[in-house]
Length: 236
Image (cartoon, rainbow, N blue to C red; front, side, top):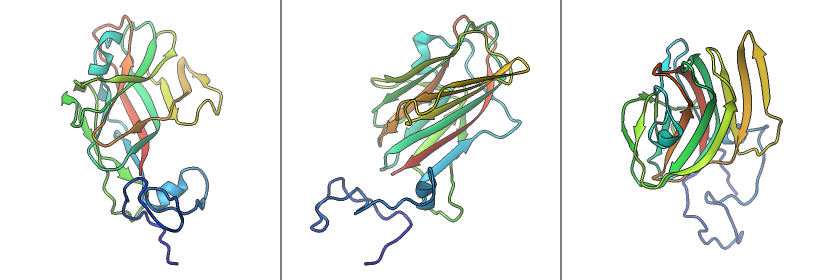
């Protein structure tokens, strides 16, 4: 029986196959781990990263409040493809903090609008497949910055106060999604800045869905924060 390491064409979920009697969406009859962590996904051409340019800051919203969080994402993803998108991690490096904000919090919203909910602004980001010779194209369209968005019925999937006091330049916020509380959230203080690692729920962006990752800065002044970021996800 011939096998292929690269990801095959996707079948309809639950498609009938006589032997074996139950398979995955790509006809997987068994699971054969390749390496550790996400290497199996990367090896078949299913893993993607996206990032800002080092040294080039992205400007976020000025004084984003909880009331309008879902309409003012700093990262916006639209899944215009046919595969599901699984969020793996996000890392945010603050280069200018939102002045006078009393805390730093993040919220993540999902919706199933069927079209992009982005209405304007932001910088277009091109995701990169982490397999060097992959020709697979991603279904994700991504924008970062002071993006505006209007969804049909956005639902709050993640809400977390990351820092209970004012943020400062060089704060680094790292989010790991889908691993539960597999590790202890950590905070490291370096010359006044903080390096915070926290964990979020599994996030699945279905075809036609939107993801809005928003920063909330209670009592923030009109000075907009700036940041750099990296994000990882996989498609299947």
